[in-house]
Length: 367
Image 1: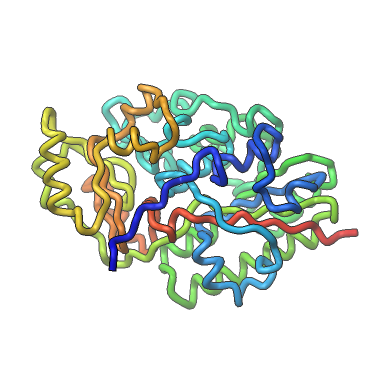
Image 2: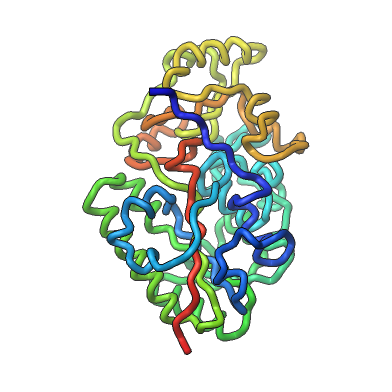
């Protein structure tokens, strides 16, 4: 059997960062599912962690979503929430907006983007320093997401100044979307994190993920029941999933060459000791090359994996020297974040299971 090939993001094409530009008329929208092209209002529902592979293999327990039209598109690299959600809202690739992973290098420290905390316990940066591009290409788009996200640094990074409608139960999520659609907003952005949360804690095997997918499908049906016929529900995701279980590996073979790590377990950046980046690349290739795509920073950036160039210099400094990108169900541990080994399901890599996400649409059912 030939080794798997990494899935290249289709930047500029049928890719996650092009969804909002297509919806607001900035780029051609012919590749969007038809209900989203003709609707007066589009509710863009991001189901965190619902990769295309899950949609395909669990169609029997998702009858509502099975009625939608559309298909798979690629997410961005790394296939992780911080990068992908920022790409959705800004319409930019990770190398352009600068949110280059779950944990990024910043001024000699490492910023946990989702927790908005520095490894060194210093004062976290202002969100505008990290990501300066306006969400939704400057349009006023209401955002329906978890209530507790209102004051987070990551919200300020990828949803800055958008009208915020918080929910604490999914019934409120549905009602927010209904009232915003009835008010005539052309685009409504909604976010639900449950699939990703369950996959991280319990993995991809029954019964927990199965129950969550059935719940999500019911939520999709409730949203269609709440939306008028001239509105469309457009469903996508930020990434898919890979079951890692207890296959987390320490970087023992190269630790004498590593001055720090960033990224995530399935797109692990390693920063070399001063002057030893070539040695680290060679040693990592020798130790991990059978199980991972091992690339230098130059290979990742010049190869366009993080998006088209030219890459802003400030964003290049947020990367390490060598990337470990697993081909199979394994994760590489950062000594500064051992808790990552508790994740049963994970994501971030360039496998098909993580890189392909749904883009599916259907019209509302009221009227």
